[in-house]
Image 1 (cartoon, rainbow, N blue to C red):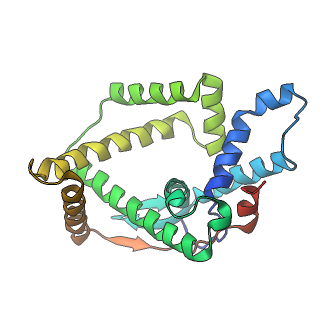
Image 2 (cartoon, helix red, strand yellow; image 1 turned 90 degrees about the horizontal axis):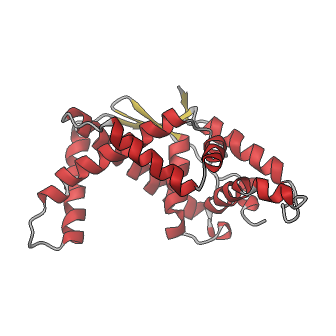
Length: 227
């Protein structure tokens, strides 16, 4: 597995969202002689897809031997970035660093929790994954849009099913180890966060965690979000 020595892969949240939206509306744009398509659109999409594929080969951390990929870090950074900056222009190097650290911390905790769920013998039935997959497709609007999404993110249905299964395992173990340990008369939000922090430390005590990160935000990716 490649280590995280490749710089310039992390893509700003607005650029990623913009490119995904542009891709999903490709057919509509073609029917209108590509009116409204920004200059260099195809190059932007190609670069985005290339970066995504490259990011899947880069390991940014390992948790008990299980690798966390750069692509996962990018996704999580994109998820939480709006809490730190509303536009790509506001993503300073200092904010980028905070977002990166927070995203990696969340991913490490998530991996520890999922591993604990597996250790405890928790399982997700295929029918549950089927249900979640159907919900994803319905949210996309059509099978064609779903396939475009897979193509845009460099995924396939098998990897998506695995991701959905892991989501369910995480929810199951969190329900048991966090919410299941909170007394009914406690403030749920504060008590849940307190219990989460305690449990996280318990999991980390017996874990082997290694991080190998060297991440910067690509200037042209940030510029793409301004177009």
